[in-house]
Each structure stands twice: as structure tokens, then as C-alpha cells.
Image (cartoon, rainbow, N blue to C red):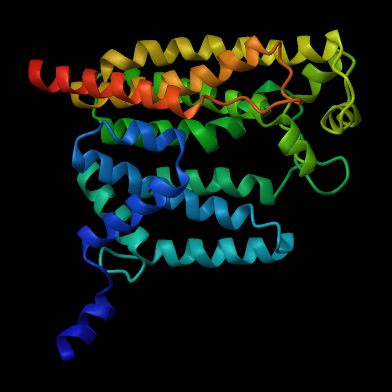
Length: 310
């Protein structure tokens, strides 16, 4: 009886904590989870732990059932709990992440930056109606993308394994490619939540306004200027995908298939946006599940070959 009580005080075992994070990733991760599947078990567990950590932060930041100030308070409380956590915490996500940090030399600073990216939407620098962020130019948007996506890439390559320092910059730029893809895919959904992630100077260059983006999200027909503005951002994303191609041979062989799966799926989303001539308002671009399974199968073959061939 006393042993059971002690176990509860110490929280879940590391193995149980990773299992819990794996369930969160399987349920929520979508594109990421397909890539996790072709990693060796210890790396897959670590990726699921990091994903679960990010998911917790995102869920707090995006909970629009709560007032903004309530979300800020919840985030501050959760972050304080994280900072005070240990490998023996009662929260399985904290337990798994602390173990992952130890195994793969991931600093608290990188994880703090992950949370900082999540909280940017809770503390917008400027807004047009008091409810959402605006980004004056691409440099400002790049900073946002760095915190919400590039930092993820920097954490991932520590799990994947690398020795060439060039991998750091390439991982950063791969994250930018992914986030620009997300921004293009989600323009309509974000606009309905009063969030505009398109650079204001880019929009102005094509004669577009925030009000125009809202009109498009409400069914206004696309014109040439709308498509060309979105195309300009899409071309930036495609250029950054070149960094993903260069990153691939720099990470450990047992992780290359996972990165290939992730890049192939995200690039596939961008390609569908291009194929739709940048109409991201009528249909949300996505890679069909059967195509994802095919990519996963190809990734599994690549992973097997990398392990067999060393």
C-alpha cells in the first residue's frame, strides 16, 4: 500500500510517460506522426515527447473558449510547472521530455523558445482590430516562423543526430518552409479567427488589405492580384525547401527516412496549393491519407535500407 502511494507521488515511469506521449502524437500529430513511424524506437519516443509538449502549449494558446487574459494566466502557470519539473514529475509529458532532454542534449532554452513561439499570438505587437497579430514585413514574419517552426527543426535534428554544423542553419530554413506552407494552407481559417500571417508590405505591394483577406475568406472571388501575392509567398517557401534537400544527407542515416517523409508530405501540401493556382479559400489543401500511407511505405523501405546498409 505504501509503495503504491510512493509511486503515485513520483508520477509515471519513463516508459509509461513515453506511451502517453505516443498516444497524444498518434491522435493529434497528423503529418508529423507519419514521419515518427519510420524512426528507431528511442528516437520515435523522443519525437512524440516533444510533440506532446508543443501540443500542450498550443492547446492553451488556442483555447478560444477562454478570454485572452485567462489563456495568458494558464500559459504562465503551465510554464512555471514545466520550469519546476523533474524526471519524477506527475505529468507524463514533463517526465518524457525531461528524459528526452537528457538523452539527446536538448537545452531548456530551446524548449523555452518553443513556448515563446506559441505565446506570440497571446501577445500581439500590433493589430488592426484588437484581436489578432499583424506582421509588417517578411523579416517580422520570419521571426514568428523561426520561433514556431525553426526551433522545432533545431530540436528535431538533435534527436535525429548530426555532426556537421551546417545542419543548424539548414534545419532553421526547413522550418521556415514548413511554416510558410502552413500559413498559405490556413489563410482562410486564420482570417476567420482574426489572425493574418501575411506580411503587410507584401499585401500592399499587390494592392491588398486586411479587409480584402477577410472578404476572400467570406467568399469573394479571387482576382489576379490575390493569386500573385500568395504565389510570391509560395515561391519563398519552395526556395526554403532547397535547404531540406541539403539537410537530408547531414543527419544520421537511421533518421533520414523520417525527415524525407516529413518533407515529402509538407512539400506535397504546397504542390496542391500551386496546382489550385493559389485558391486557398475554396478548398483547404491537404495530402490524402492514401498518399500519406504510400509515402510512409516508401519511407519505411528507405529506413530499412539505411539500417541494413549502415
